[in-house]
Length: 228
Image (cartoon, rainbow, N blue to C red):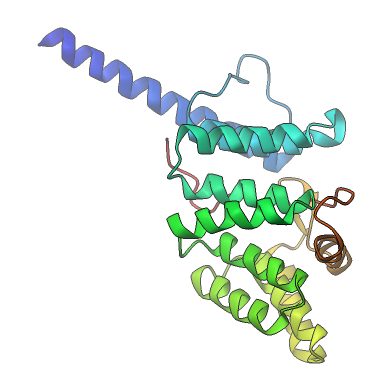
């Protein structure tokens, strides 16, 4: 009995250490810093692979590791198929590479698992905007804001769609909110809150599902504390 209790305690400690490691890696991604070799451990859980995805993307400027970021996100979904955050991440990256059909498939799974995930709803808004379904996109951005009012790119997307429909004043107001939420326009170290960059991403998805690579949205999952 004592041996069993000790084994359980050891397992709990190991899981806690893995979660702490995933959080350290995510923080390093946000700060654009490089982990020392003794802290950069090989992932084994879904949460670790999700953090690895953001970390690889944060290092992509130096190592051209963007495909690796997508691979890491896919690893997370393979380990934990019901991990909604991981499916959102896959969808984001697929969309950023212009793979609209794959993005839609991953996003459908994400929304099935996490119907109130603001990031997923915002991404669906961008996909709808890419199909020139501006009214539907606006409704989706509204839902994303209702789910998470601190999500900058939901405000950004809504603002751009409002401007597209001729509501320049309302659109600019939304863009100001997006800028206030992300004053540096950066998530995980890469500027995304630029109307031109989002327009290029939407235009890319509209033109082709296999076109050149576009800028990647790098918003870390809100409430990233799950260990899977």
